Length: 185
Image (cartoon, rainbow, N blue to C red):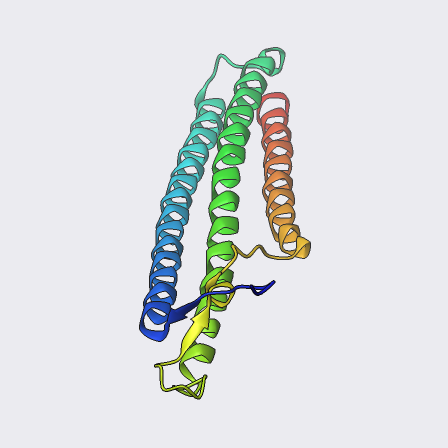
């Protein structure tokens, strides 16, 4: 009895298994791409609503004769609340986008590995063993583990967070300064 018993899979079955893995990860990659696109559309809708809200606040401040410097807390309160709601919405949407992008990257890496294995497998000679069978693959050769990107890939997401947070702080500072100038200047 052999200490190491490893079964072989016929070449056609091996090719079919690898093609199935490739198809699955290709479909998952497309699915994640569509999910990212939908989230980006939602993010742009949030930006549009936010800028409409900001323009309404400025419009109300410039055309209101009753608002004076002592009433500055009203537009500043509205601005603070609007920025907070916008920040929470953008943070949640970015979290979803980053999650989908990470999953998509994992599927693309796995797809690449499976495609490379299939290419290598197809380039083998037909008869591996001299005994006339149609060649085959060892079971562990067909195993494609789910691939994950390196840790440095996560830095991309942190830069996006910093960019959006910096934009929001800059926008908030500008709106507070313009409110003070409009009402107290």
